Length: 80
Image (cartoon, rainbow, N blue to C red; front, side):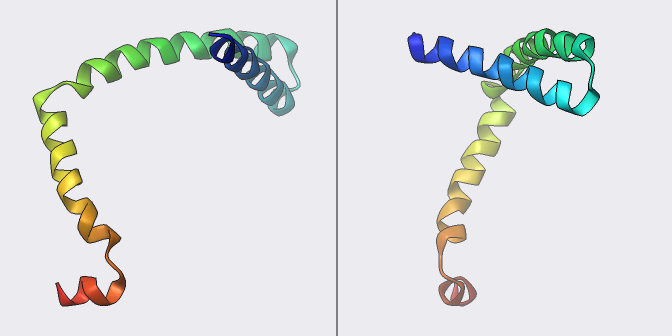
């Protein structure tokens, strides 16, 4: 749990620092720092929901079948 909490603090500090560096505004940096994790949380909910969808599962299975071909050296790929 300590690692997760530390990562969360690091994320907030990074978000604030980058936004402040880009905008020069403490207000905007503060708002972005707290709005962005809320948006990510909502997006993660929908991502998890879609991840289990049959269409998404089928796409992942199709991609998994293509992986061995993608790892072949060029000469073997051309012969296949």
